[in-house]
Length: 423
Image 1 (tube, one colour):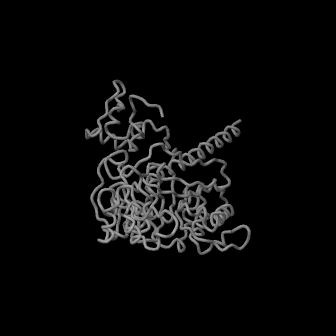
Image 2 (cartoon, helix red, strand yellow):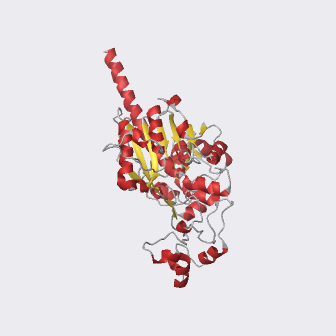
Image 3 (tube, one colour):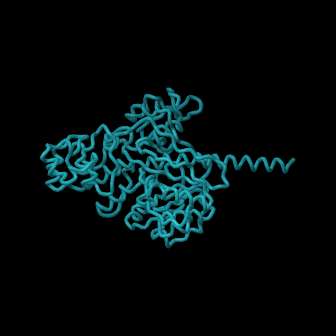
């Protein structure tokens, strides 16, 4: 991106990842005042203003990667296994409208309804729901289905062989709805699950129902404005009648760390709000008190290593998640559904405690106003299972680019046909 001295309202909104309406409001409120061009009276912003407003705006200006794109028209998505809305919110931020979301967990459904009363949240088991009403009415179907093994009936796995798995339901809905593109999200372990046969089967099933699968890629969340070392497989299917290439979002150069997540900085304009959180039992707190930031169980005295680790001390592997304290200057390790599991410890850098609910949400790049419903443990579960919002937004831009290309080509073809008829 070219570095300039002055930026238009649209350019400033793009750099700050805020809507133009937000910037207009900030201008009126004096929070981020714009100057006016002498003749047109259009709002413009000086580079210095943007740098002062956001500590890391300079990094954004110098980061040559920008996946942002405006949709040419209204695009709609049907999301399955929606959880607490991380992916849906990210897609919404990219300009894609949520036509409907399906989720079985009642607390996650309440979270979705609390934050987006206008969303059509379909609560219940996907296996009992028919989605025919969305046939040819949404461009995108998404879903973070669980990784489950299939029973192999032959060399090429078919849709019926996957019955009883939630991927079968994902494929069934895609077949019912007939979207232009479908996006599946899963853990990195899917690559090696059943020695790769599970993924191979999924690709085979999507091929059977009329979708070509783009070469599968693992996206690292840290490359997409997420302060967390989370990796996810993205499975992209393009309807076979479409001759448009899908391109994954380009990775950013800027890597955000825990400080960016919990303090005022490049990701958030304020310190993380206070909230409830889990606590360590006294015996664990005594151990973790001895661990420095970025340290783990091997930083303990040898006798404490042996007593804390038990039989695991004598087994292979680094087990670097045990008794692990995160450092301010590094991204968090992948968050789990429970913040105080022994195998995947995520201790606060300064205080000997797990991350709070709002700290968890910040690390997953949920906005502070996004409320989670249910007990503290239910809230942790919802956040830990979510797709990071910023990663969802970046994936959303890649979908928008694909759909823009599709409709641009479609319009050109229609114009050519009209011209030929006129001649």
